[in-house]
Length: 198
Image (tube, rainbow, N blue to C red; front, side, top):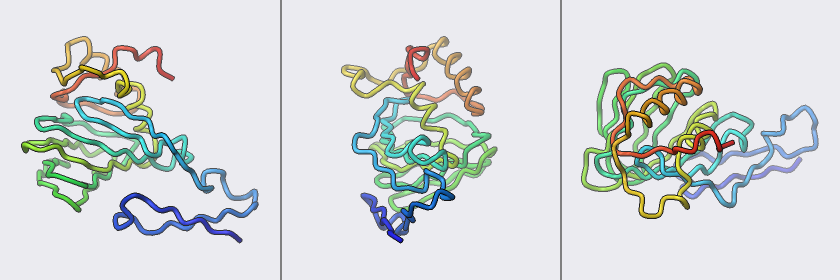
């Protein structure tokens, strides 16, 4: 029996995960090691999103996204009917509301927004916030892929309020992913090329 040890950039955040790499056919394929050498990056509602592992890489178990959230960015109040969302702060301070309770998360702190609990992420400070977002199961990365703008296409793009048409399209797309938007996000653009994404 061979074991692989998955090491992350920030090993203090996650326990060592040992993965059985035997040839036993009873083990689903997604329990095998997965490596993404060039993660996809998007500009999504004003934040930079780097999808380190998506649902396709983990057999749908989870997605791991690193986000950089600029000052003034606000995800808007929303809820996920399918995913639990874990937020872990790498740098900075983020105001988070979950189920009506609001607190500030700082470097090294984490919070869980369970599915069907409304929540909101806001950078009310003057500095960017870096955080890991972990969604279980791993379906949120597809929403980012469709609604986000690939980072290589964002030269000269600066955050701007959503237009009425963009807001309507965001609501429509969110509904397809069982996400309910309660208040419109502030400070970001979304893709206008939804139909050409896979």
